[in-house]
Amino acid sequence: MTTYHSIEIEGLEVFYRKAGNPDKPVILLLHGFPSASHMFRDLIPVLEEDYYLIAPDYPGFGNTSSPDREDFQYTFDHITEIIESFIDKLMLTKYALYVFDYGAPIGFRIAMHRPERVTAIISQNGNIYHEGLGEKWAARQEYWNNPTFEKRESYRTAFAPNTIMNQYTQGTKENSVSPDGYTLDIAYMSRTGNDEKQLDLIFDYQSNVGLYLQFQKYLQQYQPPLLAVWGENDVSFIPEGAKAFKKDLPAAEIHLLDTGHFALETHALEIGELMLSFLKNNGIQRV
Image 1 (cartoon, rainbow, N blue to C red):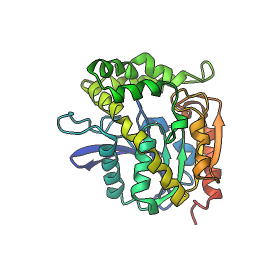
Image 2: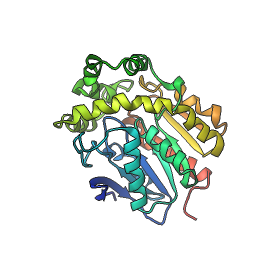
Image 3: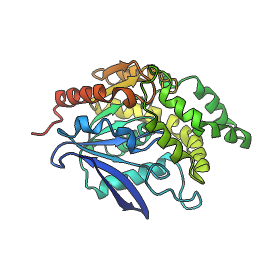
């Protein structure tokens, strides 16, 4: 069963859910925007018999502390530092990384910093290639190049209720997505003061694109086992991002699923079964 916890990291209460036996191989589940660890609620039961699963919420997301911007710098580097401290406090020394959306640049930072700890990577619409950036990213690049107040304000639409709902439902079969996930994310995103924190992260996303070549060099050098399982109808991170892993990891396993950005909402069982096969084929199982 899944249990729910919090732990103090640098003065923050970091919420996380866990499941499975600590003696089994660890999978660290890293969520995306605008979500939190609840996005793994259907995946965890598929994996918990064979793996020890840890899924934290980032600062400013879900049930983790959301400090004021004056007290906490909302950047991907800083969030990565918190998650690395979280890993250390839980004494996790070997783990596979499940990376999705914002979880990809966070997870690949962790992998670059501590390559010896990473047993495998599962990328679910977790992009680190220019080829994987959908059309909307051209406008964001223009914003990063010319960051006016007006352009910053325009990105409030990114966490508007209809935008969040569309992130969940776009590219999926009609009536296949439960409203529970996006309704909860709408509630998280509407909390007082959260808008400016999220705008900070949208602006800082350029730091992730700037690290793409370093992320790719990490793959080239260390050749971690990698499974890319991708909602192929995602308009944010398009399927070319999944296929691009083959450039650096010829042995990468690539699966494109007929769904959208939040692929776990419709294909959690299928993704879980692909993960079980992939991890066991790469020797990542209880001895």
